[in-house]
Length: 326
Length: 314
Image: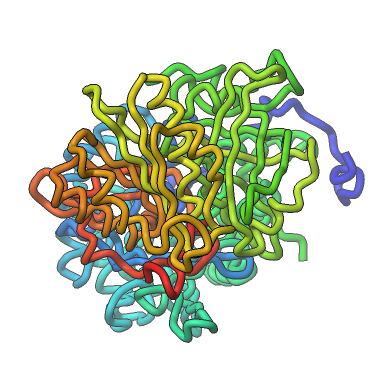
């Protein structure tokens, strides 16, 4: 394979089943959070798994991160909710979801029954709502972690984007960690001047790790009709267009907080994308928009990663984490 | 849990017994993903048609369902959805699926230039199909532009069930009427309308619906076309107390039910919900859609629909 021949490392090839793909998402040795492989789903891009389970067994994934849940059921924003942009897309869904109570009653038992680790994304309108959401998830079987979505760009008031301010980040995360029985990941936006400062605020609030990054706030305009393409005017930008920004955020946070577990994401669609995020410092890598283009992509990446490692003689996927040579 | 075509450790790979071996992923009863060979490209009036070798999908496809096709355009990312126009299950070569499209952006331009025998990544069949009538009633099929495509597939199935099929097709102008000959062949009676009077009746499809419904034998209307046309057809169906099933178009990113972009307000179980056109639709009971609360239609190619023209339904 040309890729291997041009690699600076002399490979001692392994069989792909000799590669240990397990990763640990916990910095606390007394409470490991082990996933079978580093490929997880990005919240909002996989529903709760039912639709993709029609294509393949989602229990093959490291974990399923479900679409964000709110206290009340939400109908979301008006359409058009989506616009394709150069190597990316904008979305403004507005957190349409059945509400946490209904979800815990119907979707969670189904997911748990499949045996796949579940990371539950929650989104509150207020600091108090984060606590309420976390309470619904206390001691729920199958839930291995909470991802506190404090950075959804599709809210009416930018002041509600907690992850744009350090104090708001700390307070919201504190509410979740004060009641949660599982590790809490803070999902952050790259739309800030200093993402390291926000990550430190999340840690101060008790976060066990961070998810980097949410979509970037963007806009698309139809020149002929002279109007925004999205009904909500602005939306979250995702896809390959944002990968360099996401890699930068993961790298910066990992350099500043080397022990902090990171779920890295933003424009991942190939095995080398996954490896790049691991090298930048991610423990696990979430795949989002790529699932829209290929419903099988997450499964293909779990298989592709072990092959990639095997061809290069890399025995464990975990050793790639933060292993940048520079 | 459903049985996979083969184990889930590796994506299922099924070799087609006829034609070139194709790689198919998916389960025994759900939608599939396959690399499909382009068998034919042709112009049908103003529109384009592509026929793919896709035996497993052809076997499962029902009228009203769609496939989503991966395209390679400058910076394009998402698949393009197309309703299924025709399937052949027992062709001399292999089962095929045919789609119809209009070139409206980089993705459809790419599709219009595909060479014969090149390979295309297709997911399908997706979505809810047109429900077949439970009783022996006459059926009225109403299509706008190439919204006629899935209706002609449906007409074939209705005919096979020995039901009387009447077809009304309309468009802004003659060359945007889709496949008049096929519509005549597949129907007991047919009517055609153009808004500029260049072919058939000068006017809109709704102008002839009253006449087609006058006999009182029509039990169900099936419609596909621009949203404002579907709203108008539903209003007439309601007046005449006739069932109406419409296939809608909404911009969709994923086509498989996870992105939540293609939603529309539908009344179900005494409440209103934003339902997904890709899985709860694209076929809905027209009387359950809250037409007055529909969002603006996307101008993007990802909607891949027949545009409501400025002089037409917009």
